[in-house]
Image (cartoon, rainbow, N blue to C red; front, top):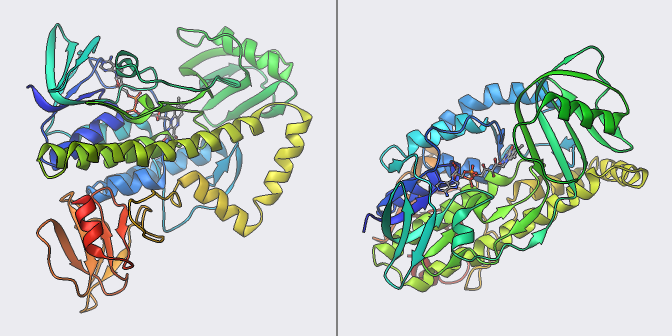
Length: 456
Ligand SMILES: Cc1cc2nc3c(=O)[nH]c(=O)nc-3n(C[C@H](O)[C@H](O)[C@H](O)COP(=O)(O)OP(=O)(O)OC[C@H]3O[C@@H](n4cnc5c(N)ncnc54)[C@H](O)[C@@H]3O)c2cc1C
């Protein structure tokens, strides 16, 4: 065996998963196709659940630093720092569940440092995969690599997903967008909704979204973007330069299961959807957080193989919820007067505080609950926020200061220590048992032993 777990792909999800595996005592090897890290500026924001997952491992200060510049850039490009649903920028951020404005290349740099103890082999394109009862073998970089388990974190066009025979059902693209950092010459029409699509223009970015036609490959060209702007706005423009151009659709697909035997999928390899609202990494990072400690527990021999089935059971519904809201956003982004009317009504609804909160929770995923295999009322099954903790002597700390070990954590004033988990005195929260992925496993109702035995 070359490792306990081979992770295919050193994108943000693969890097975070590899670090989680090492923390859980499993040896990870990352195989990455690219010779150098990607500089593509895809994501510019991390949702609350992804932010909290990274904070739990001590990356909070770095995220907070990046957020200052990221928030400035957001205001420049979107004219608002409020959250949005289908481009309706009205969602008031929840101060208890902050997101982070950070560009993806910077995030990947930060995660590469975080995973610096892991062996990452670049220039290793995985092209073949075989799995048997003892392990998994892949071909990359001219040789075979073997491990007990393999996780495909190799993005939306995942080779692992195809080679291992996962189904990937869903809906095709309704809209296609081309965008980039654009230099125009002469007059530019105003940004906004037009009869044939939407022209987005603000700050350094410009782009067009219109009903999906045939897919194109290759770099975005100035002529292609100018033609698209002319189709949508009816105005001829001169595009002198497009930098960092990209095309993307809003197809919404999800792997039918996230585990086939010894092969798992995480991140975009498991689910793709429109980037509207910036939710991809708010799924992918929690996928990695969910799978890492579970694989560690099975590899250490603390848990049986069947434990790994809880990964699909918990994470598949989380992505289903995001696919649902991105499909709804696509319907609201389509051109036409009927959609204009619907958008006006949704915008009015979002002015109601309770509805605004509903949209905030929908987009952050913080109210999504896992179905636990024992009776446990909410908040059990939800991800725990980065609580302030006050001990018996009045000393204040934050939850993230106690979670670097990657172990389970009991917040309590009265329960005795248990060697399987860490125990922290907290007089202000009520008793809470947290899993290594920040999920509340028990909140004081029902027997603690059942929750402890289930997860540890
Ligand atoms: C325009 C745009 C804007 C977005 N904005 C946001 C946002 O604001 N917030 C947000 O959360 N998300 C956003 N997203 C989505 C986000 O970028 C993705 O969810 C994220 O990149 C997924 O990370 P990943 O690690 O799963 O996959 P990827 O980032 O795709 O990484 C996969 C890695 O696997 C490697 N690889 C692929 N095939 C192989 C192979 N055969 N062998 C070895 N290595 C391989 C690739 O080279 C790559 O390094 C946006 C996406 C787009 C397109």
